[in-house]
Image (cartoon, rainbow, N blue to C red; front, side, top):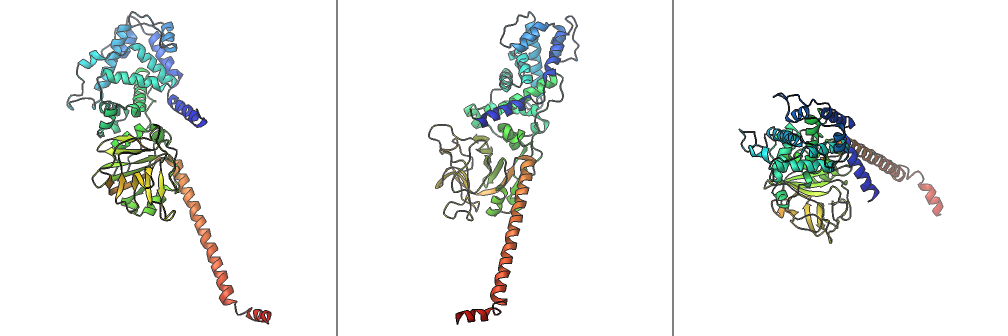
Length: 453
C-alpha cells in the first residue's frame, strides 16, 4: 500500500472516531450493570430501556461482550433482550414516514415485528464498533436491520435512511435507483447506513445528543440541482463532498448568470484547486455531468488520476459511472482545450474515450455535444438523453470549501497583477521606442551623417 493510500485510510479512520468517545462505552456499561433486576418498567419508557432495567447482566459479561464480540456468552434472559431490540427497531421503522407504504398510515405492518431477528449481542457489538470507529461493523448491523424490516430494494433502503439522516433530506423525493437495483450496488450508500445507525444508537441507546450526521450543503441557488440530487451525490461520495469541504459548495459558473461564452466557462474552472461538479441539463430534461477531484487545466492530451472522478446522471434515473478497473481499460480521465491553447486539437471539455472519439464531450458552442454509452475509461451507461445532445442549462460548482475558494481568488489576483505589470512594461517600451525614433531622431541625425563620411 502506497503512502498516499495509507494516509487516506488513517484519515478515514480518524473521521469515524470523531463525535464519540470512550465515555459512551462506560455509560452503556453502567446502565447494564446497575439496573435493578426486579424493577417493573413503566409504559412511557423505551423498549430497550425496559429490558435494561428489568434484566441484570454482570460486569464480567459486559466486559466479554465488548472485548470479544465473537464469544458465546451464556445468558438465560437473552430472549428478552432480543425482544426489546426487536421492539426498538420496530419503533425505528415507525418513526420514518418515508417507510410507510400509505402516507396516512406511518406504522409498518405487524409482521415486521416478528421477522426482526437482530440479537442484543449484535447490537452491543455494533455499539462497540460505534465507539471504536469500525465502519464495517456498523454497516453490517444496519444492513441486517434493513433486511429484518423487509426493506429489500436499494431505493427503499436509501429512502428509509434519508428520513433518519436529516428532516431536510426527508422532504425530498428521490429519483429512480433502477440501475443500482439491477446491479445490487449498495456500496455507494454504506457511509449513509453507518452514519444513520451511529446517530441513532448514540441518541437512543447512549443518551448522547451531540452525535449528528455531517450537514448537507446549504440550500443551493441552482437552476438544475434539486435537494434530492445533492443528497444522493453527497452520500455516494461522502469523503469527497462532505468531509473534505465542510459541506460548502460554491457556484463558479452559471450560463443563466455568466452567459454562454466558453472562455468564461473555462476561466471558472482554471485555478480552482478542489473537487468540481459540471452539471448539465440537456434540452430533453435529463440532468447529468462530471465530478472530478483533480483540478482542471489546459493540456495537450488526457490527464488526471481517476480518484474521485466519475460521470453521473441525476434525472430521470440516478447512476454513477466510475473508472473501469478491468484489464484493457485506459486512463483518459479528463480533457480540456480551447482555441487559445492548442488550435490543432479538439476544443471543448470531456471525459473518457479518445481525442477523435470521446465518451463524453461538451463543445465550445454547447451544441452537438457527445455522450456515448460505452468506452474503455468509465463504466457502461448512457447519462444524456441521446448520443448527440444540446445543452439547455449548464453550471459549475466548486466543492472544495472556503479554503479552495480563497486560494482561487488569491490566484486570480496574482494573475491580474501580473497582467497589469506586463501592460505597464509594454507601454514603457512603446513610449521609449517612439521617443527615440520620432522625437529625438533628428537630434542625433548629424552624428550618423558624420560617421558615414
